[in-house]
Length: 95
Image 1 (cartoon, rainbow, N blue to C red):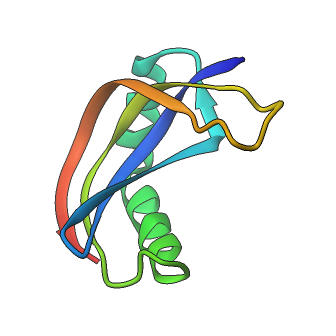
Image 2: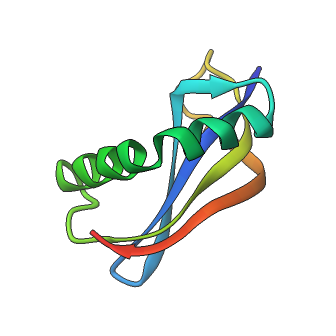
C-alpha cells in the first residue's frame, strides 16, 4: 500500500460528479499541497482544462480542486485509490 497527499479535481459530467486524482505530484502534508496550489493556481487550472478537453471529461464543469489523502495498492490493477481527508482549495468554473 502506498499513501500520499495528492491533488484532486471534481468534474461534473452529465450531472454526475467525477473525481480524478494525480499520483504524478505528491506531498508529505496538506500544507505543502496547499502552498503549491496557491503558487501555481493558474497553471493547475489550465492543466485541468487541457486534461478535460482530451478525454471523456470534455464539456464537463470543473467544480472543485483541492488536496486529499490517497491510499492505493499498486500491486493490482483492480484496486482504486481510497481518497479521504479532502481539503477544498478552489470551487466552480465551466470548462
